[in-house]
Length: 59
Image (tube, rainbow, N blue to C red):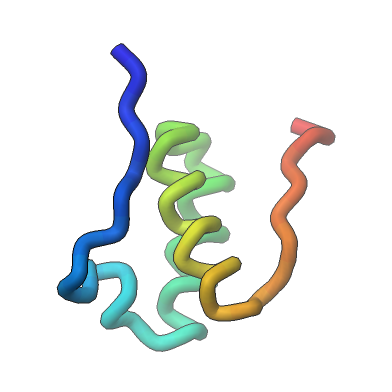
C-alpha cells in the first residue's frame, strides 16, 4: 500500500518540536535506519521550515 503524508490543519507532534529537537530526531532516525517513510515525514517538516534540502542518495 502506498501512503502519502498529508499535513493536517493542526500542527503535528513533529511540527511542535523546536528546530534543534527535530534535527536530533532526524539524525537519530537516519542512524538507526528507521522507516524511510518516517524519515521522509521529518524531512518534509524540516524542508517546510527552510532548514535545507535532504538528499540521501548516498545511502
